Length: 354
Image 1: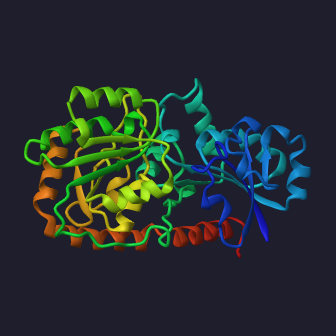
Image 2: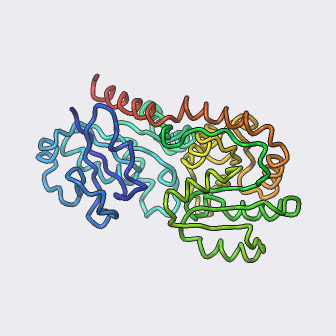
Image 3: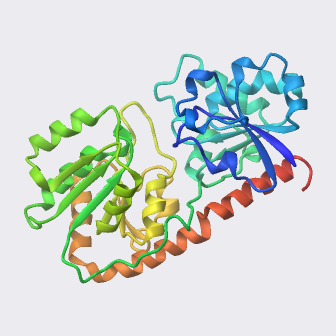
């Protein structure tokens, strides 16, 4: 069995990803830059290694039977270029979102990315939108293959929406950062409360904007109709998903230029049968077809988002078709099993056959 050496940002539950550890027919080394990026020690095993402790790349790849290198962000691809030169191994780089922008990037980032596009062998953006972005930066189109992130369809089983219950529970999940658009959603929720006083909004996530969003909730006088939950057990997340009637992801381009790929939370909501409302931001339209799999509105637009939420709440009979179409879309294009098989096929092709 051939081995792929993966370099990822850190080792924690969010980065302990199937695209490293569950690719069919391929073993792995999960590399991080140095020990401080080993965030969750319970995930440590003999396959976790540190880039700064590899003093002889040639000996390292021979000892671990490594056949290719896979960096999981553009900046990590840059770090592996010297390793590639010393070992002559092919270098694959995944492109996930912010790394295809200049949002909070160091000086010289663009020049480094262009050098990587020239010397790297293959690039795997997680959506067509990001593929177009790196082409604009100078990445040769023939080096690009879009590889969507997948959803574990067994973990997120389908449950058709109950159009007869009278709750109006709105759920959103994602890091509390600008590009998630939580502030836009909260303002839209305030607008619909006049017509739906029993509606609730729950946001699950943590991040730098937590205090700001809690203050906004007070300014909007959302009261007990609003919850902001962070660091809660998976069982509570599942409970909130079961209680939800609608899932909303108000993604937008951040003030610093940061963008999404395709949010996994929207895929997961669609897989479970939750009707979704999202925006035309980045790769989201590749997942959600407006008025078929859900509703899409312009990003960073409070009025349009409020109108979409109101439309959904007034047209519950539509939810079943949205849910069925959403599950079908995820099964056909965003199944974790299918995407991991595609990743293995890409490795096979790069390495000259299975």
